[in-house]
Picture 1: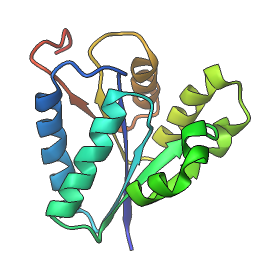
Picture 2: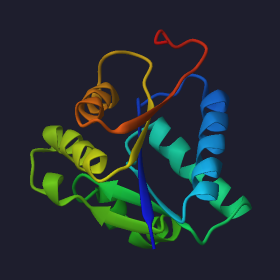
Picture 3: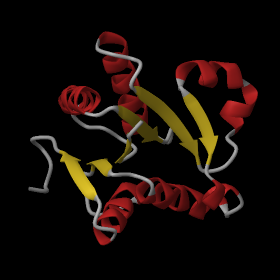
Length: 160
């Protein structure tokens, strides 16, 4: 089976939620429809991550569930997961701990996890509205790695 891996990254806050959700819906639908199997790698560190995960789940539920997997990649063991692992195991198809970041200082761990996700992906989807922060740094890293990149934009975005 051919696996196509997609990572999703975005700023902590989402300004035009409905517009970004619609763009994600069409992208996820297209990916699931045109690939034998798709792995979607997400974090759980802000509004965008939660929007991405919920949109992927909706498309999987409404279109086709058997040829994709929603994977939460933790940068380190998260207290929220340790408190109620069953809830997260039920929500995500897979919950994994990133080896590259698990033993790093917490301030460095998320960027290390993000780079690991980029490295294993054929496509990286970004919601970036300003040139700073973790999503921006990860976008710059993905560009240096010559990854295929899709940018989600709102009408208010300062980027073209």
